[in-house]
Image (tube, rainbow, N blue to C red):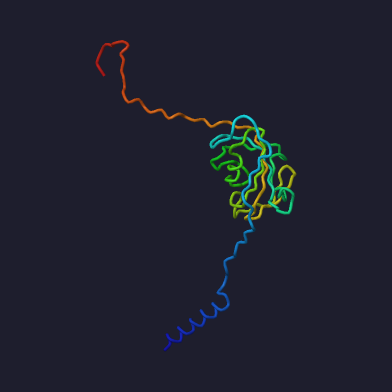
Length: 190
């Protein structure tokens, strides 16, 4: 009888907790509407064309995407033009250096560019910071806006230099070894 009473008490507790929500709820993530990836060539450069594995030097300016603004450029989030220091890195392999920005969108935008070329890229969140966010930052007395999670971005790129990747040719080893004696020595044979 005592165990039956404990069972009913436990069942009553479970029913009460279930009715009032049972505790904490998992927060839902609100993802704002995302624009489609868009790449616009403003100026075509000349010279070497950036390909996967090449080292590129590029100036970039980034803004939060804002559909209500001209060219969809909202608040500025970073700029190598402001700092006067362009970025240099390997394009097409996901390692371009910037303030924690995954470079998938950058890789897509920079491949095929030539020095002197200028492009504008609209990057949906999955090609930019994704679910990550970044606080407001100040660099050389210039304050840049924070980047909320799941924010689409707009970037303007100017290609400064392209250095082609070094390719080591694949040469198979020789299949036959030929020995030519130049001079016959004396002593014990090896």
